[in-house]
Length: 172
Image 1: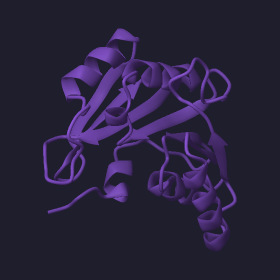
Image 2: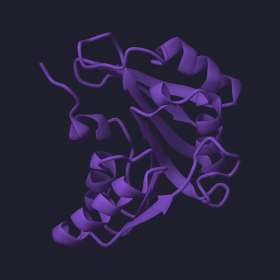
Image 3: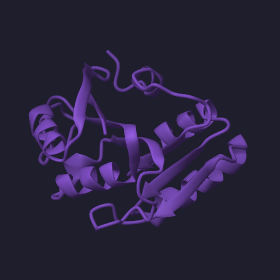
Image 4: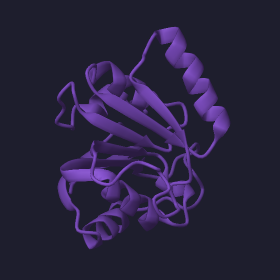
């Protein structure tokens, strides 16, 4: 049984080492740090609403000597909440965040806003109820597809991301 393999999930993205990426709701930033190692000539933006998460990430980046990550304290549910410019990001990852939000569409719309045309949006969330999954708020893949497609994003791929999560890859 596999909980969630960051490396396996990232294999679903098309990457060049000079890309710009963002992890929305980065928490421990497992995706941001892995992306930073792959995007050596690029930049990764790690965004979260919790200062403590970003502070811990900054310490980790120093220890691991990773210099291409920018942390941003923000509220992704607000209009232009990421503070990133329109249409500049090549890929946005939203891993295990949407179940925590009442405004899932606002977060997905913010990802769309910052993505360049042809950019990739990867959403990971809980696929099934388990003793350690959230008790409520978990969006189904159908709910996320409906929101994203309603915003003009095209589904490119749907996959299982470990034993407990699904992945949806959209293109702007």
